[in-house]
Amino acid sequence: MFNRLKSFTLATLLLSVTLPLLTNSVRADLPDTYRKTVTNPKTETDKLFTFGVQQYRHGQYPQALQTYGRVLELRRQQNDKAGIAQTLNNIGEVYLGLRLDDKADKVLQQALVLR
Image 1 (tube, helix red, strand yellow):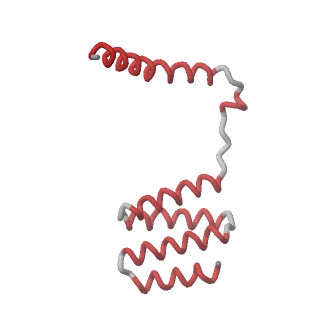
Image 2 (image 1 turned 90 degrees about the vertical axis):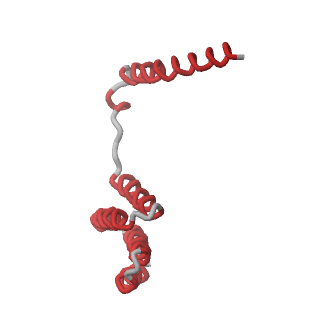
Image 3 (image 1 turned 90 degrees about the horizontal axis):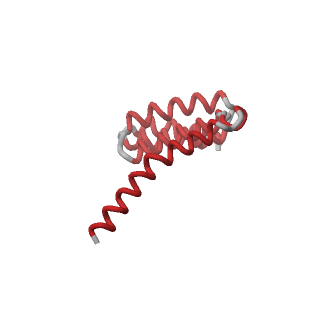
């Protein structure tokens, strides 16, 4: 039993070391057009928004507020009205978490108008 566990551990260790080396060598053989990834500004903004949601859920309200502020700027640049409304809604939720009801009401009213 102990030898099987030892063998399994060794095999797992070898795979974890060699697999990244193999995948990198395969990627090196691909043409530049396949290796380069095109970044979509909307996708990047959505990822940042998701990060703000995670901060909010972990009670990191000041950090979430800062992240949502950046997301709001980006969505305004993209003229994404639905995204702006969604971000304003989440900012309002953060203000409620911070017990800043007046600010929350103001921001939530803006979100409501956009929706």
